[in-house]
Length: 341
Image (tube, rainbow, N blue to C red; front, top):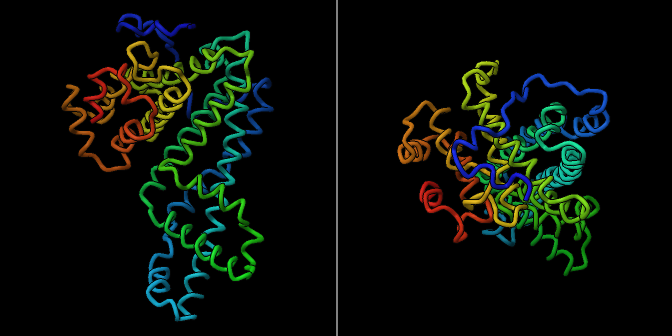
């Protein structure tokens, strides 16, 4: 099982990977360049996706007016004309998730291949590790915004109902050339998820493991757990933290750490919360108190985190509560379960 049992004690934890991963300035070596270029082409659109999602207001009022006045043709047209451009925007988000899925699989292939260990890969190929981190960072930010915006599912549900009604009446609308029935079905499954981007990455990671049968699963899970450990070490080591030039890098590290914990939990047979797991979640939650400069006691930390705005560590703890797979397993530490209640 690789190095699965190396983190059973605090002493052994301290012997884990201990190096600085330069999330701010890492540049690709010649050997990384091809994959790095491929991933960069995807990531260059990530900020515009987040900006579009943050600006997404929905057509709630127009839809309500149309539903309440079913015989008013003008209100029906107003609602439809408001929803259609929003559906095109939702299609862009969905298509970006497909690009992100392929990007993650390319990164996993590079960061897990022999003869190097995951630690060696991450230390040697820091530009690729940084891109992996940026994918995770984007994913959690996207899903945080999506969870706070119920208009997305309401708009898309209205769109699908209207399309179905028109199809029954043998009518064809121009937007069906943009979002046909097959695309609408796939988008519906995507947006039905509370955290659709995380689900996409989890599926991509699981698919990567299943398709690469000659590659031991430990190569992938060790890559994820090593990334989590590196983030933890950088955040709790003053020497490393002092090298960050921006406070935002601290939150970046925490999002990355949560992201790899969630991926690990979905891919590894026993998940991230078992006593035999390689993910040190107890220290992660304790570390939240360090980053937030609050009380170091565990219960006090959780209490303080719950009082924070949703866009800080509370959102990350919610991601662990609600998007992981094994939290409620019998093998999960009672202490961890209690801390995340």
